[in-house]
View 1: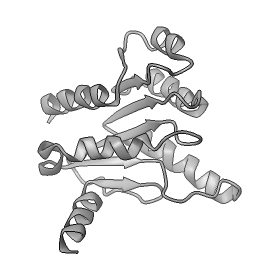
View 2 (view 1 turned 90 degrees about the vertical axis):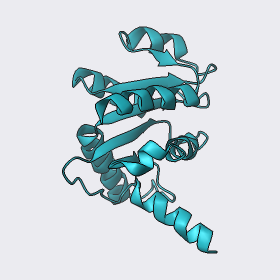
View 3 (view 1 turned 30 degrees about the vertical axis):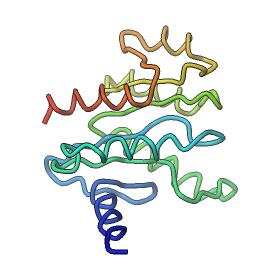
View 4 (view 1 turned 180 degrees about the vertical axis):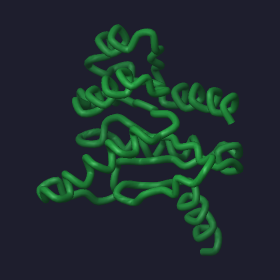
Length: 166
């Protein structure tokens, strides 16, 4: 039981899930996980595990921002508005944004967010499943950014950037 408590503590310390607000103290570096949420696998869970496996993430002032809530009732208008406002604020405030496009859905909101980030010149990393239906469009429209084909490669690319930045 003690082991689980300590694992939970690590996750809480370096992880922030909507609608919670992270502590944006001086020097905090934030990684926003953008991409499919509805009607697709929980790729964010795998991305978080990959990031937290890395000791560098745990030893530095880095927070992972996850817009995917554990529970979400999209039928409640105030929750939809709260979610939109949380996503917009934290995607804008984040140090980097990781986009993942899973094969199950077109991810229209994530595509919109990607355009928003590109227009604002945010530091972004993009990846999509090899079977993502809009893969060719994504690759062409994301230039000069590269689009990787695995979540592992996406995380590796982001980590290489973070190592140089921090």
